[in-house]
Image (cartoon, rainbow, N blue to C red; front, side, top):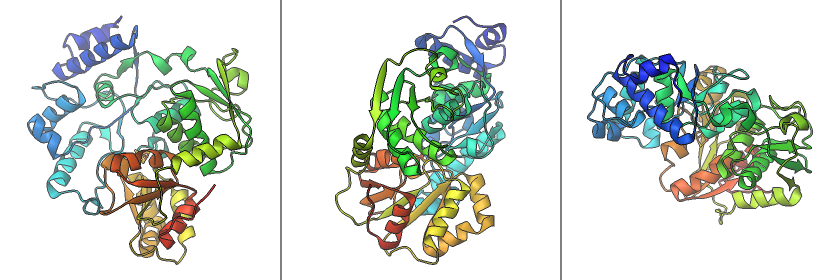
Length: 423
Ligand code: F3S
């Protein structure tokens, strides 16, 4: 790679051994990817909160753990404060409800130490997969280095920021250097759509967008699709669910919806003036196929867990769950968990939503989710969710059955203990 003077200085150790290790990692990473150079970034979202297991393996100190697990280095040096504006993504533990998760005291203490270490190094502890909902909203053309597929596809497509889907190590190295290899979606020419999806059914609800995203990811893989024929204007929640679904069934990191997303005023602009390599239809049959696939792991109707908030819920989504619950109580033997960023949880507490959920027998949680923290209530056999992403991952991760539907279907399931959803 061609390195600028400041990058060469970092690689040669001029900014200290930790920055040297970070730049060395980025150079190796960039060379493997075929990047010709680095690009400056001042917006990095990564994941550097570790439990007792990792801390023990690395030798116990925060510096050693960061070097081992975030920089792929044997360490022996002090980690300086981050150089780039940096945020912590979702982590493994809810710092308030950790006992409900089944987290041990030892793991809790190690995670709290690790979080405090990150905070002292200048990482903003947003602890969510949706930093764009709580203050980190990159602008169009801003080069970012974010982990978390649902967040990356959102900022690329909806906001027009430029990020590949980074890993823990590359994002940690970007935090310390303010650099990331210039490849993939940092290059304008790679951001045009190459596949067109002609949408011939109404896509007007969160569930509709989840189904379309789930179908599309499966068929387009890692290509950039443009969705032609979508009427109306989807809101943040719809696009959040849509991108998360497309990044789960496939590897979509960028898409266009003409008239909606940042770089697609028209179909032609989304395609960069070229013809699509492939055109795919999305009609009633494809919608039904996506629904069937998402509900394929469930055979019975008894519901153990209802999970809302993947990606992390907005304040309005939390209010909607409260309104659907009204004064009713959830069924005995059924658990209702709603997940949100820690900043939104504070608002939900002030607005009274946490208490309303608790009165109904549910729980508002933050900082984590069942798929990342790998936890469900003991004995759970069936989870239901309004998130195509969670319905895709959680059954596989936890070896349970899953059902996907509307938020209303999910709240009904919490109240009755039975699944009654349908297409
Ligand atoms: Fe976020 Fe967990 Fe879903 S990280 S996108 S709530 S699987």
